[in-house]
Amino acid sequence: AIQAMDKNSSYVPPHLTAHTDPRIEKKRLGGALVNERNLLRTPSPLLGANLDDDSEAESFRDGRSEEVDRDTRSRAFSWCRDFLSGSWKTLQEADFQISIVSGGLSNLLYLCTLPDHVKCLGEEPHQVLLRIYGAILQGVDSLVLESVMFAILAERRLGPKLYGIFPEGRLEQYLPNTRMRTDQLSDPAISAEIATKLAHFHEMVMPFNKEPKWLFGTINKYMDQVLEINFVRETHVKKYNKLMKLDLPAELQSLCALLAATPSPVVFCHNDVQEGNILVLEEKDHNSTDHLMLIDFEYSSYNYRGFDFGNHFCEWMYDYTYNEWPFYKASPENYPTREQQLLFIRSYLAEQRRHAAEGDTDQTQIEENMIIEANRYALASHFLWGLWSIIQAKISKIEFGYMDYAQCRFDAYFKQKKLFS
Image (spheres, rainbow, N blue to C red):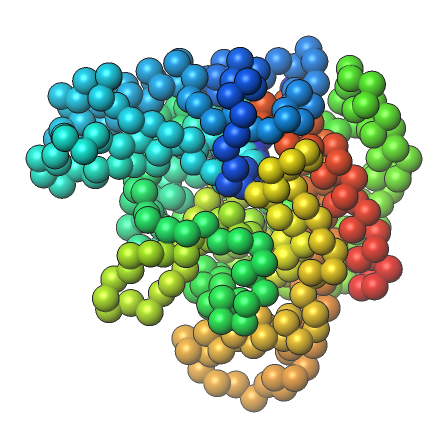
């Protein structure tokens, strides 16, 4: 059966037990809230997906809805009351405040807040972020491992605090922040800090399977599901048939052979470093120079380092905050130049050298090898999220042009292949 996934949300890697979905928040619902006349079309995320018809929201061409449905509001109130202490215990549902948070293609995100007239009694938070997983993923055993990962990173102060876990989702610390824009990824200072954060992430030792099974385990699983999909809507059928003419199984064999010949160390990877998963912190520790925080670790696993580089470089091209159909904007010309890639790679290597002894290595050759590594693994990024998006077109309730996005990623794949294979 096809599993529900959100790119920015809750599909846990198969080698951790099952898989993830996104980034949709991978790819994330970017920031626009709209049009009340669409509210009746917006299903509760708790009701699950209807696999008898194509679930992609073609009906949302007029914009996205902005209100929380009654069922979600009621259950959100119950979770906050049950998992949070202090004033949340005696809060009346009429006083409970909840709003949709922008950002997220896989998970549904809500901000839950105490009203101004209700004061905190102790250490309880005034507001929390509620994350609801993709409906079909709820209860999957592998989500336990993703929650373990989230908790470990929170304890190491590498991610938000964790306030509660339940089968449908979790309650997280809300960090006042500015959601990063896609065009900010190319800012030299921001790019350098992202590279530094990624180097630190890659140095972590985590209690998970160290074999790099996630990437091709996930791609193979997606491929099997894609080949079995039967779309109902005529527009989907046409787009699906066009994609199938690319002979994706044969192309996957070619990709596997190319990457097998591309050296890349196995490290603990984030696997979804894009602007929607990077917070620009508004309130930071006075002793800290950190301005950014990586979030959303549902895809994180031991993987080939090149995937984190290549995937991040691909994300420079896609803006998921676009508020008109298909709810993303592709700008291939924004793929990082050689100079921009070198800045990122050199910042990464500089952070690594802070924690390792200097060796007699040819730095120029290392940089050249990493450029090849990153750009070849960018192919895997296009392939992975292209397949993911086809599946999302069948099962997702999130307003996004998944079939268009899938075609966009495979177009980019073949363009990239000509340059770097």
